[in-house]
Image 1 (cartoon, helix red, strand yellow):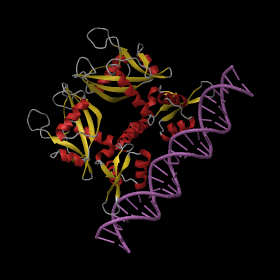
Image 2: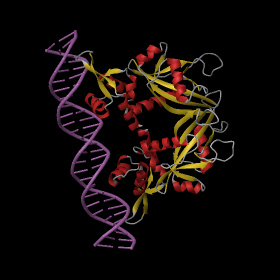
Image 3: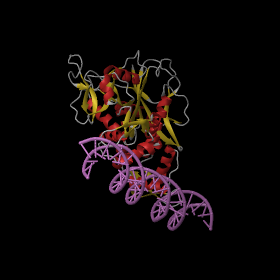
Image 4: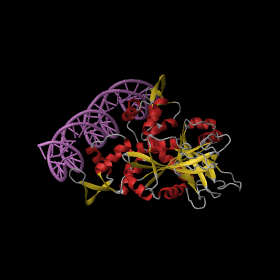
Amino acid sequence: MIVTVDAVLLTLHEQVLKVVLHTRPKGAKEPFPGMLALPGGYVHEDSDEDTNETVVRTLLRKTGIVSPYLEQLYTFTGRERDPRDWSCSIAYYALVNCDELLESAKGVELYPVDDLPKLAFDHNKIVDYAVSRVRNKSNYSPLPCFLLPKQFTLTELQRTYELVLQKKEQKPNFRRKMQDEWQIVEEVPGVFKKVRGPEAQVYRLKPERALEVFERGL
Amino acid sequence: MIVTVDAVLLTLHEQVLKVVLHTRPKGAKEPFPGMLALPGGYVHEDSDEDTNETVVRTLLRKTGIVSPYLEQLYTFTGRERDPRDWSCSIAYYALVNCDELLESAKGVELYPVDDLPKLAFDHNKIVDYAVSRVRNKSNYSPLPCFLLPKQFTLTELQRTYELVLQKKEQKPNFRRKMQDEWQIVEEVPGVFKKVRGPEAQVYRLKPERALEVFERGL
DNA sequence: GGAATAGTGTCTATGAGACAGTATGAA
DNA sequence: TTCATACTGTCTCATAGACACTATTCC
C-alpha cells in the first residue's frame, strides 16, 4: 500500500486558469518517467502531524510558498492507479496569486487546466475534479479572491470571477454582491489605480468576512 | 502506517437521526476496548478494487445491506488518532431506511447523533462532520429521500426533511419544490394511504431526476 | 469630441415564504 | 359537528438580473 499526498495548485496566468505541474524524472525506478504530474509526496511519519502538514511541506519545498487557501479535495484510491502497488492519494487543492508564485518559484511550470496533455497516474482526473470544485464553489463563495494580489480594484476582482466561471458578470450587480451582500472587501483608504480613464479605488479582502461567507456556503 | 475505511451509516429511527455503532472487542490487542465505534475495516488489497468497494463490503458484512446512497466524506489522518501508529481513515457516509436496516441487520445498535457518548478514535469528530454535511446538503438536494422507504406520502417526506433540518417547512412551498421545481417524485398511480383524514397520494422517487438535482448542487 | 474606464441609480421578473381556504373522513 | 389531515390558491416581499446613466481621463 502506497500512501501519498497530491496538490492541485491553481493560479491565473495571462488570463487563463493554470495548474502547477512538474516533469517526472527519467530514471527507470519511478513509474511514468518523463511525464507531467502533480506535485506530491510521501507522508513523513516522524515529522508530519497529519497530511495537512504533508501537503504544506510539499508545496513549500516545490514552490517556496505557503498558500493562503488550501483544502482537502478527495481521496483517490485503487489497485490500478499506480503500477507499483495498491495506492491511495489524498488530494488537496490550493489557490495562489500568480505574481507571488512566480517570484518565489522561478522555474515553476504552468499549464492551462482546460487544455492539458496526458498526465501521470490518474492526475488528469484529479485536476478535472479540482477545477470543477473550484468553479462550483466560486458561484457562491469568495474563493477567486485568493487568485488576486493583496490589493486589487473591483474591476480586477470581477475579471477574476469571469475567468474562473467563464461567464460575464454585470458590473453593478457584481459590486453590490461583494460590497453590500457579502461585505468581503474594504477600501484601502487613499489608494487608487489608474489604467485608462478615471482613478479606481483599490480594495483588500476582509479575511474574517470571507471566512464567514465560506462557512455559510460550506 | 495504518489505512482504514470508516462508515457513518445514518438513519431515522423513532423521529430521531441516528448512527450505526458497534462495541469494540474487550481483547487487549485492539485499542479502545469496549468502546463504541463506527463500522470500518482494513482495505483488502487483493479483492478490493478501490476503497469504495472496501466500504460496500464492510457495510454488507456488518449490516447486510447495500446502501442506496454512499459518498466519500473526508479523510482523517494523523499520528495521534490511533495509539498504534500513524493512521489514515477514509470516511464515508451513507443513508438508509430504518425498516430495511432493522430487517436485514437485527442486532444493529443505533445512537442519536445529537447525543453521543465518547466514541473510539476521533469518531465523534467524524460523525459530527458527516451530520453537518448531511444537514447542509439537505437544504438544496434530495438527500433525505434516502431515509424513506421506496414509497411514501408527501407529508412523510416533509416530516423527514423537517427532522433532518430541524426546522418546520410550509406545506404548499415544500410540495411545490418537490413536484414543480425539482420534479424528483412521481405518483404511484392508484396507491393511497390513509391515517386520519382523507386518503393521501403515495409517491416514489424519480431516480434520474434526483441524481440531476444532486449534480447541480454538487 | 470620442473612446475607454469608474462608479451609481433604478426597473422588473422571478421565486421563496407566508397566509388563507376547501375537501375528506372519522370520532 | 368537530377535529385532523390532504391538498390548492394566491399575496407579498426580497432578490437577481438587466438596462441606463453620469463622471473622469487620455488621445
